[in-house]
Image: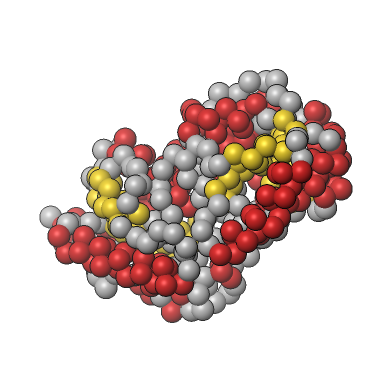
Length: 354
């Protein structure tokens, strides 16, 4: 059964190998996997995105990403999505944005929504009142178990990473690493403080999106530290081979997230590269990082500093084997394709009978 799947990104986040967002990385992996398996992959995403299938580029606002920019981008996405469904035969629409309900198509085509972010972040009623039109998919068992009773999660497809992209040296370099979106909830100032306490070099690599609150956090909490600490090195967003090399060469990856993480592709990628992870006791992170085996789970800056001192005890080959056992993206792709097929069959029974 050859499928045509239309994946829809968050309207203000480009999809590319260098993207900082987990949702965008999952979308890119699904797109590549669909093409490799002989399916037709369409992707609606901001102009400048890159994909293996057919890109439907949206020219969305740039500059300051305030409420007006968000509103305009959603309108553009809604128009392009409805136009695409009118002109192309699509079996399934797969939506990845937190604001999906603002451009949900008025169509009989089955819609899948992956809930990449904490469920409490979605707009009031989006996951309840829209449930009759969509199939909600959680991205981890933790997220499914902790979902409020009124939100019906139909299935779980855990995130995964492309293991073949990571070759793991079994000897670390001389730096600590933190990376991701630079924003208050990711807590990178805490990683900086922990590195300062142990007097270690820290590389911070990340994107600063032009949301006012993100820019304010970067200017007030990160920039002064970069200017005043010769052992702190800030890089812009990195992706592809450079990202993999940074992960593989680090003593450890620091994830000081202050939100209830639904998953962590970055932790999975670090382990795929043989690198231990020191992560905050937040959301799904304790289910991803095995405390004392593939890294450490911490609850304070002091805990993080002490874990850095002990991270040499973690066997990097154990980290790699754990990634191979639990985080292979092929299992994620199998789960989504199986779901797509079941929904496509349900939506066109007469075609299947013929």
